[in-house]
Length: 278
Image (cartoon, rainbow, N blue to C red):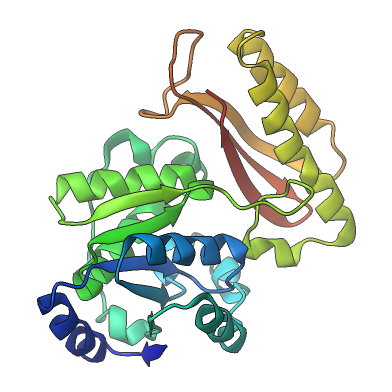
């Protein structure tokens, strides 16, 4: 695996390969890699000739400086995982390589910015679109692979691709879960043993909603889910919503594509999860 830290290096490496007709698959990450990320690499390897992964903890998408500070950065372990997964290129720049001084960025992504995660993390999706646009510009991938766990983020990036007419295809890959159902996340390292046990209420409730979607009305499912999560010790619910997977508007009985999305604080760690229930 080749490891580059500057835009110039990685562009020089990829340009001749692209000229020779190689297709480039791109997996942007913030590191602290787990099986969820590695499943994206595997999918990219299936669909493209070359796989590029970036590791960059992006400061502009954190609302809380403390959160940015404590974000795990186990770079040596990450490199080892990428090599084992058969990744071709790692782009691991520092902040000054990506951002030059006091840059301004605003992309009008409409109500996606204000719904669900947007409401709880103001400005977050501006930071996401800003950095993903920069990374797309550097890597120029044919396809980019993102995990379903950040369902709204996938919608936001899709929206950016359409708005800016970017020549990249977005591929959403399924959530990878631990054997007990917990969605894999870099933040799981912050969970205590008790937190870890209580966190299972999220995936369990999502599964119950999926099981009941065709027999119980949506308002009742939502109430039951909120009650189940709120009564779990050490868990503070931010939201549980059943939405149209194309718009994030509240789903109704006739909605064909229904996604259940949840966000909650478990101990001191905020977790998100979702499930396509119809």
